Amino acid sequence: MRQRVLSQLDGLAPVRSCADLAELRELLSSSAGLVPVDPRAKARGLVEWGGLVVDRAGHRVTWRGDPVPLTPAERELLALLIGPPLVVWSYEQLCAAALGGADTTALRSTIKRLRRRLRGLPGGPQVHTVRGVGYRLDRPPRRNDH
Image 1: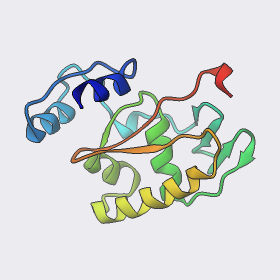
Image 2 (image 1 turned 45 degrees about the vertical axis):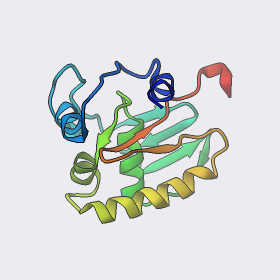
Image 3 (image 1 turned 135 degrees about the horizontal axis):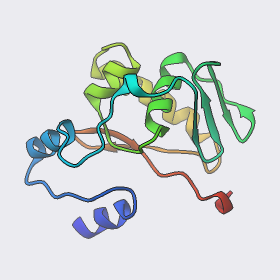
């Protein structure tokens, strides 16, 4: 199991080992070698993931040039998840940054709707659950993978 997880994370980010969930949460919430994620520091412009473009200022999402209808909450969650750097976002971070402090029930519901919409995008991003921690996106395809 550990080798499978390590192989899936290969090249995404540094890999750290934690003894338990409490240590993992501490690691993710601290600045212990991880890139700090400050939602307010993110630019209010274009965020791209392969052929997916989220135009936060224009309130639009396109996949390979075609519009993707998303609610404002879905659009903001997607912009955070695909924005650099690709990291694991904790439930708390996403609730605060994208849903105005809503609870995790609202977050799970919004993620469920977002996943359903993304499934219709061939080769598009997929939202993955990091159990007990939060959500992350797979890395974008290389330019020649389209």
